[in-house]
Length: 292
Ligand SMILES: Nc1ncnc2c1ncn2[C@@H]1O[C@H](COP(=O)(O)OP(=O)(O)OP(=O)(O)O)[C@@H](O)[C@H]1O
Ligand SMILES: O=P(O)(O)OC[C@H]1O[C@H](OP(=O)(O)OP(=O)(O)O)[C@H](O)[C@@H]1O
Ligand SMILES: [Mg+2]
Image 1 (cartoon, rainbow, N blue to C red):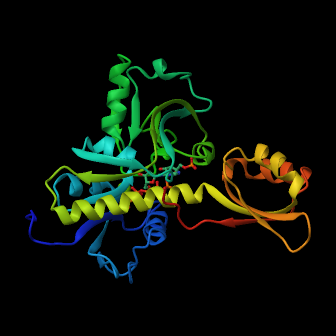
Image 2: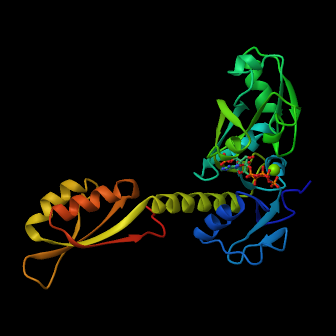
Image 3: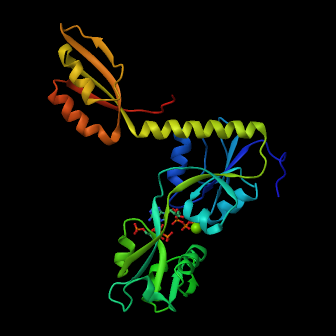
């Protein structure tokens, strides 16, 4: 195992190739960590910070972080929980959102989870699945498969499955229906519980702060508009977050320019109401980052 002093770089585990890869690398780029050539190498140096990425299979990430081989990891909560990894979850990241759920053949004899007592369940998540059935006092035979779990009932090797679901499209395509959720998942940033140097801790704090700023920014929009001066009180009511608006006089008499930030979730309603209140030339811009 790597000793504390064997590297000074903060080592981050990222899935090499799969659902989490691009989103994680985009996030890292989005917070200002730049990497070269990550498609070809397994260990990639950051070009502008003392950080390196280890690109590995997602199943291996919790253990690498637990052992201190990597200091941080970006991985699904499902994988961390299945591994029962002794790591610290720093934060959820809002992508790779899915659920582990029980599904059964649409036209089969079972109707609910209780009907699966004494039956066979195929899954890539034996730990979480066994616990789910045990907690319900049901006894099932777990068949562990590493992939393509949805095909198991049709091959008659299982009566039901426990697998990840997002849109439900894969279940539907395989004649299966979801009957109960076991676990909600999203990508998490995890940290090793092994001792870290002051320098690494400082870098982790910086990464977390930047992710926070990046997330806030991606959920907000900067808006600019022109309006008659007398419309400003009404506009303030429409945008409650606008405590002290940036209001600038325009060359046209009695007209002002107003700039503010609004949450993306309210953006379209706000736009329509602003227009009704007399605002014109409303422009929306994405925000790179927001630090309080
Ligand atoms: N349909 C989905 N929608 C959203 N997120 C998903 C979905 N399926 C899986 N995920 C999340 O993405 C993670 C990686 O999924 P992927 O299918 O790429 O894994 P994998 O096939 O096990 O890859 P690897 O080769 O690295 O072992 C999952 O552990 C889960 O957290
Ligand atoms: O509900 P849906 O949106 O259809 O998504 C669910 C599917 O997504 C995942 O597989 P993935 O596509 O990542 O392929 P894999 O099993 O080969 O890793 C998961 O294992 C399901 O099969
Ligand atoms: Mg995997």
